[in-house]
Image 1: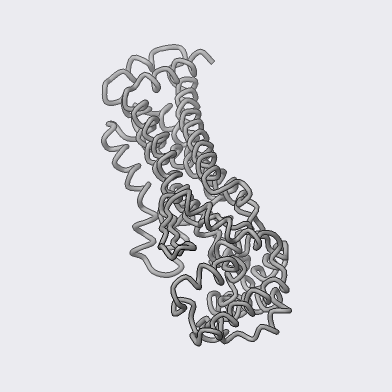
Image 2: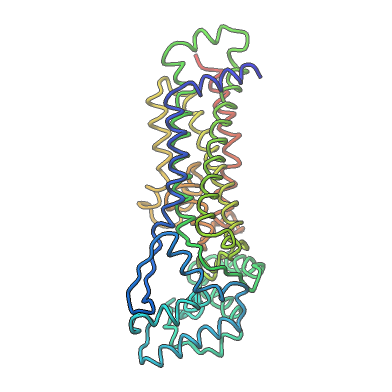
Length: 413
């Protein structure tokens, strides 16, 4: 324990460590506020004057207008919303809401907009995937709204996973377990989760920078030659250094996530966290979660990804003779999932991105985007949903790379 305390003190004495931790905290607050700052609303008041609202004022305005939508998304409520939408468009002789006269959308359509989410997607053409206009949908079919969603999922999976029938069956089973009817509480924006992902990615990079010199720094300075001559200069010291890096990284990530969620949910309203993720993302999303559960699930997945990346960085640090090399290689692997996703086509990219430690919070490749997608991996005859593959890989990589780092450090000459 004494050696662990000394290692924690050694890492925390570094000015760079404190700068990075402070930046992580500042970015957590800033990134939590940005989704709210992008919200925009406009309407015409009773005197005919145009009013423009931004930020929290816009959120409050839309939540007030859409208050009657809050609650269960029953087929009856969806049908009533679609019929109201169609009647409004027919009254003004248009086929799309953006053709309505000024002010009509805010008065007639905005209050029911949350209930219209996903309706076009549910009625998309099973062969082409093209969504119809809301004005052309037969409202009577909405009496079996969730049956239509299930049929649409089957046709979507037949397109997305044409050569993977076990994945098609697995997706149908997962969607069948999703609690219905869905719940909606207006106000939550999907950008809240996007920025949580960016925050996690930045913290991951900061933790990699902190962990890179843990072993290689002493190799470079020659201090390791002296430490190895002491009683506990190998295995116990190596374990303490691993533990110190993990504790600092985990604490930094947990604090940043808490600060982010407290700030973001306070701006958008805590009741919004009870909204089913199907009412924010695709109506066919397979996960049985509300937005609050998604935030917590993604926080845990992000923590695992950070710890897996730190363990891999420590392994590199134990192998490299100078800090610059270990840091450079670790950062390359930190951004590798994004580069691979953008450059390598097909299933190969999905497999590689699912296995790399940094994929859990990577830009465009994170557990968040995998969770709202319909990608399955083939593991023999077993379909594996990509979020589970990413989390499973991190769970394996944390002890694996930690063991390899300790072994490499103990055998270093």
